[in-house]
Figure 1 (cartoon, one colour):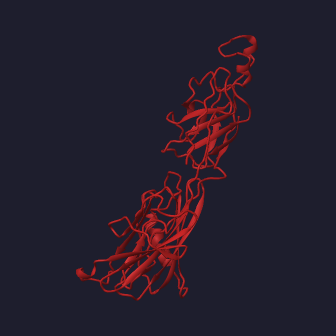
Figure 2 (cartoon, one colour):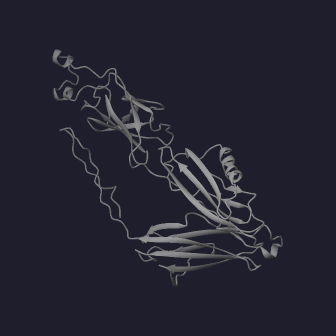
Figure 3 (cartoon, rainbow, N blue to C red):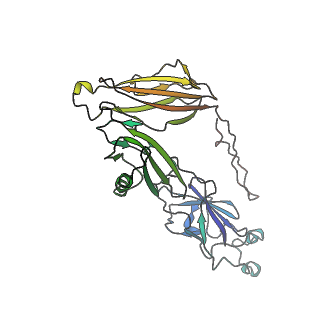
Length: 360
C-alpha cells in the first residue's frame, strides 16, 4: 500500500512512497520509464503521464502541463500489480513453482491524500502602477509580472483597497477590482485593471495571490490621487525591487502616459531622465538603451553586495513631473554542484552519475 504521496516544491513531480519494498511491478512494467496508470490510480491520470521507480519503495511521476491534480486528491495503487521485493530475490519472475505461487499481489489497497511539499513554491505578487495620478486620471494597474503560480492559473486573486488619508469607506473601490477579476474567463493571462471614482487622497491597494499548491502571498501598493492637472502617469513595468547576479544583464522598463487633463497633442510628448545611486550615493552609470523608457546595462556592470537605486523622472511639456524608484540588489554568482543517481540499483545494472543539474 501507499504510505504517502507528496508533490515536489514546484508541483512538477509527485513522489509516491510505498509501505514496503516491492518487485518494481515486474509482471506489468517492462521499461524503466512507463505510463503511471500501469501502477497508480488518481483523478485525471492518463497514459500520457509517465513514472519511474526511484527505488523499490518509491515511484516518481512527472506531471503534465495539463494536469489537474491538486493537494488532497486521493492517490492509490492499482490492484494486482505488485509483489513483495522478495519475489525477485527468490528468482520467481516467470516461475510457476509451488513456492513462487505462494506470493500474492497487492489487493484491497487504501488511498492516501496527496500532500503539497513543505517547501512549495510561494507566489510573488507584483503590482505595476503609478505612485501618483492627476486629478483627471483613473488608476491603471497590472499584476501580470507576478510569478509563483506553479505553472497554472492562479487559484484565487483577492483585492483590498484602503484610503489612508481620511479613512473613508472604500468598499466600492475594492468591489470594482473584484468584479473585474470575476469577469475573467481564466486567471492565467491577466489584463490590466482600472480603479475609477477616486478622490484626492492617498490609497493602498493590496492583492493576495494563491497558487494551486495552496500557497498565498500579499503585496501592497500605495499611490496618491493629486490635484495636479498635467502630471503624467508613470508606471514601473515589473517589480520595483529587483535582485540579480553580476553575470546577468540589467533591463528596467517604465511606461509613462500623458494626463487625461491634457488635450493639446503638442503637450503630450513625455521625456525621461534616469539618476542612479549606489547605496544612496549618486554614481555615474551609462544607460545602454536608446529608448529612455528603458535602462539597460551589460553583465558585470554593477558591483556585487550593494543596492542600487534607479530614480526615474517622467516630465510633460507643461512642466509637471512624475517620479518613481527601482531598487536593484546585486548578488555574487552562485556555484552549485549536484549529482543525480538512483538510490537503489539491481546487480545487473551499471551505475550512472549525472552532474548536469550543476550550475554556476
